[in-house]
Length: 488
Ligand SMILES: [Fe+2]
Image 1: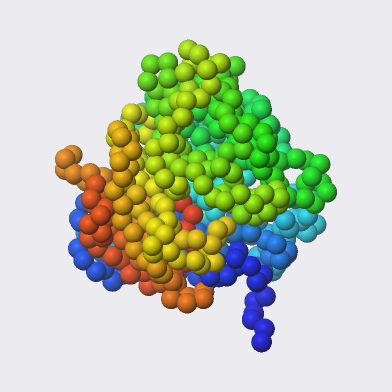
Image 2: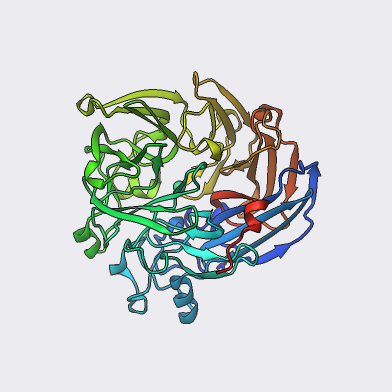
């Protein structure tokens, strides 16, 4: 029996990754428990869902079209909606009625109809700054989205001022100044080592853009800002133009090369960058936080012994058991030759988050996801096949942990933090949970937990009226900021 449409029979299209093609909205969703009234705003999520059968059977989830999902809370009531981001690529493929892009981030494998069409799919992170909502992916510029209708307004380049061809999906917002800090790798072309570094004012104006060359062209997924510094992370997952021209993979992880951490004054010149050489082969996708203490800069990341994405390690000929942990690296600007000091804070995990008001400052707690091996769920899921089923709260004073896990049959996605009105209350976490019903059959719930008492479990659950594909990253926008939505 054939199944139509004819999607690849791989982890990238099965299970949670079964394409759903749902653009919909719903109101007054069923809620179990009481939603605290102070949870008032919108939980935006990036979801990847391919509009068309891919050109190649080795297509990967990271290449799938971006969708923007909104779950809006108001006085205990919940509405939701989801729509495709109308990227240049999405519109070109819709016009052609089929997929036009070949191997992941390799334009030399595209259909001729894709010539000159921007290939980003804006499927990684929603973020909100200066009254504007964006959907982003690191291989292109962000797309501006109407936060009310979820319609795509268009690609965003700061009124034509921006020179960089790319911007990160992990921008940083200073919680006190409201400034937005961005970087873009491959800033001036495919497989280029050139990196842009940009500062945007609280009002949304591009204030500065500087370029520098990284030690090599690397998959620079995240970065960090402290009150005083910008920190760039270069791990040895590398691009090579000659390999791309031969139709090869964009990324190969070089297990034998060193990583580098670049530190500069955040309002300084790129000529002031100080590079610290780090260990061989390791890789990190996500930063939890960073802060400056005297001449020392502390960087907390979810560290792994190699790149965590299986299709990249397979392309690299690597088969290394997953291991790593939440790790603090400390760089002393007074003694760069001393290298990097390391504190392994917590067990292996990913998708770290903090209270947004703590960004760039010394902080006392954060959260991330890991796997509870006693409740394990094997499921064909995104780049990996193991669902996170455990939420950790880590104390940065001593690395002590609180955890909450459920399963088997459940997968946790990256939470967002919602502050409480009472300054003595630690706020709330909103967490999308995938409940596996069968092959390709999934129900989804948003769980609400007390951020400083996660072991108590959820205080409320929102039963989503339809399931989406897997979430990548999300963001919380409180009502007051939604109401300041910029109309220009
Ligand atoms: Fe990410």
